[in-house]
Amino acid sequence: MKLEKTYEIKEGPSAYDIASYALEKNHEYLNLLDSASAEIEFQKFFESNPSFVPGAWTPATKSGHYPLHCALITQPELRGLTTKISDFMWIATHSSGWYPTLIEIEKPDKKIFKNNGTPTADFTQARNQLEQWRTWFNNPCNVQLFMEMYQIPDYMRNQRQMQLHMILVYGRRDEFSQNPNRSKDRMSFTASDLELMSYDRLSCDKELGDAITIRLNSSSSYEAVAIPPTFKLGPTLSERLVNVHRIDKAIEKNTHIPDERKRFLINRLPYWINWKKTSEGGIVNSGDRE
Image 1 (cartoon, rainbow, N blue to C red):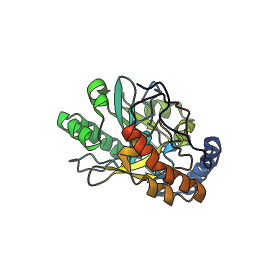
Image 2 (cartoon, rainbow, N blue to C red):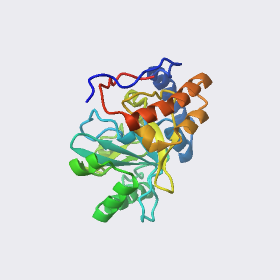
Image 3 (cartoon, rainbow, N blue to C red):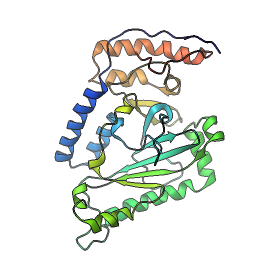
Image 4 (spheres, one colour):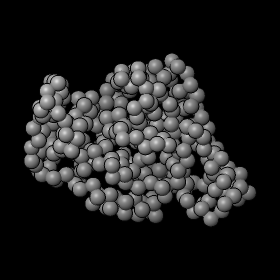
């Protein structure tokens, strides 16, 4: 292994500062909560702003590892499952395990409880949907298929244990925050592999400024869907530039990235792709970004 850097960082137009981005987008999200009524509006917001979607880090104990490709997967298919697919998925990981984390979002004005304190039909249906995903992952053949479809690296397959994790984003805090009995009943709907979150818990995670949104296309290849203006290039996450296609197109379509910054990023993509494919190691400074 070379004891020197094998890459060159170039100065270019700066990315959007993550603190400023978080302040702006948190405000935009709160306005959306007050005004939006359709689930599709939140799907579009989360797809464009992956740092708002929970589940990127491993459950219980947050690891220092980025999720696979530091990418949110939108509309992830579970092949052979005929029921509704989840809205999003992260593949979270730490040194001993990896977690396909399925995230389902429902309209924020939906209620968990009826007036008599029993679960609503909408909430029961949402929970049943997650139960079907759990059943799908309980089949070892499906897990094998999942690893092939989503190109899970060998080091994760062979050295780390897979555990399913699911998150249901449902309702608002004011339905239960002032009612201890309902808060207690709500907690009973969770499980070791299932979290229940209200929309009020979500905000921009400043540690996910480099997160992008991707999808698996019909040929089982990843392609970029959304690149936030905080996106940077460098050696640390260069592997995803090789594994995710059309990153340049996603950069081009983001109207919040200045044209000069777009040109810089797109011109530098081939350099980092080639570096990742041909590099023989060397010292990598995780803070090197451009």
